[in-house]
Amino acid sequence: MTAGEKALDAVTRTLAMASWVAAQPGGVDKEQLCARFGLTRTQLERDLQTLHMTGVYPHTDYELVTLSDDGETVAIRYDGLQQPLPLTTAQALALIAAGEALTDLPDTDEGGPLARALAKLAEKVGVAPGETLDIDFAGANSEALSIILDAARSARQVTISYLGLDSGTPTDRTIEPWVVGVDQGAWCVTAWCHKAQARRWFRLDRIKSAVLLETAASMPRTATSAAWVPPPEMARATLILDADVIWAAERWACDERETLPDGRLRVVVAVGGPAWLERALVQLGPRVTVESIVVGSRSRPSPDRAAIARRILKRYEE
Image (tube, rainbow, N blue to C red; front, side):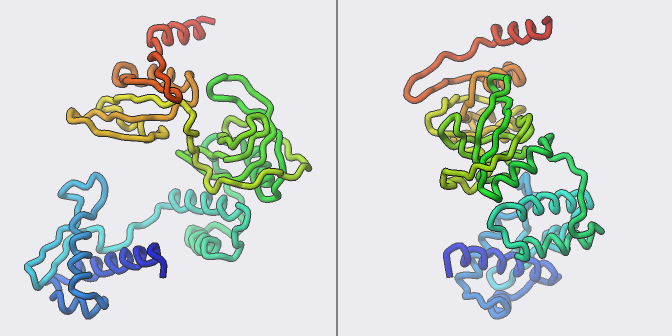
């Protein structure tokens, strides 16, 4: 048994034990718990310590599991353990759609556990197997998405017209799609880019057109996720966010996070290009401070906010 399997077994056992104890009004004797769940006393104490620190966000006293332990008897009170949380129809459909996208990826077992679970969920919400759902996938070009998925399955090259976030102008590229998925709410593809001669990450909502080629992919796949992994040579900016805008860090690829004594958040974030950083500074205004910008081992000056604002206003005047 692997370490991962042991950890999973421990989590499953602890959750089952917590639910059972919570259903016993007067609590449960520890010896009875050990016998029921096949635990040693040491294992039981460790699981109880873990339960002391569990709950739901924001993890305040009111959201944590309440556990009473007099040394011999344990009692648990937590409303969330009384019954499973239901899925709304919208949540179920979103889960089915995301799961169906995963089943389309290469080397996926069409009759595997994921496919069977999706079929059961679809039956519960009244969706026929294979039925087409009209869903807006985060603004992605649906035709391009279909072509990119086909290319990933068949290991073929694709030419795309891609609107770069920094340049704002489309460029033509030949890519070899490796992994397609959703990252931070947007459909993305990790691929080998022949123009850059390197692995690159593309958002589907910025692909304006795509053409599937007969040319077979030539590069071995070195990616297992569609999530963007910023290369080490990319510029890094150290930013300090005021407490009321720390949510912005959830949208960024942060290498480091540090909560300061005054509640602000210091983050080291990968900067894909000047336009990205300029937009962040304009959107957040004085609530974000640029502490430093480093490219490789060299420091760069912070952007001039006033100049950025003047340039943006000039575009609107045009």
